[in-house]
Image (cartoon, rainbow, N blue to C red):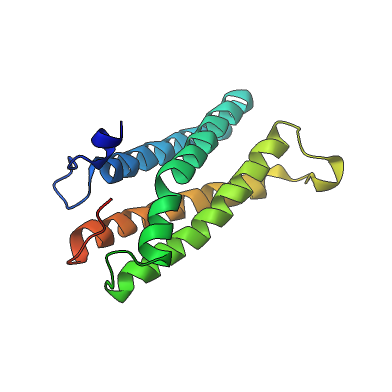
Amino acid sequence: MTDLLHAPGFLGTAGNFAADATLIAMIVIALLFSYGFYLARQDKIDQHKWVQTIGAIGNLILVLWLMVLPFRDFVVQDLGGPRLNIFYGVTRVHAIIGTIAVLFGLYVILRGHGIMPKFLRFQNYKPYMRLAYTLYILNTIIGVAVYYVWFVVVPNPPVY
């Protein structure tokens, strides 16, 4: 499996297979969240809840499996650097907004399934769901920018 993840990518950039697959998977998850948003608008709340839950769990798995270590290695520890300032800036913004989106999104999911303690529950659910959705979509767009900067713009892209 490690050999596959480190193999050359399929998008024609300097990214490896893991980077390319992560980009595509995150776009698919954003589309899944958008489909869940559509289901909510159609008043198919139970389907909406499970689509959003699957998206949030898939997102969490990808973040923990394929994003945390590259951030640590190439941004925090600066392995293979130094690189252009935009490399660090866009990645940090993505990490900050992404952390908020993941934590807040999981909070909303837990609330939607009735798992939160009563004192942490909110009553008007729609603004919280919409904020979580907006954060995920915004961060997906920033994630595309991160991929572009890492594997197209910088002259010495990260190799992992």
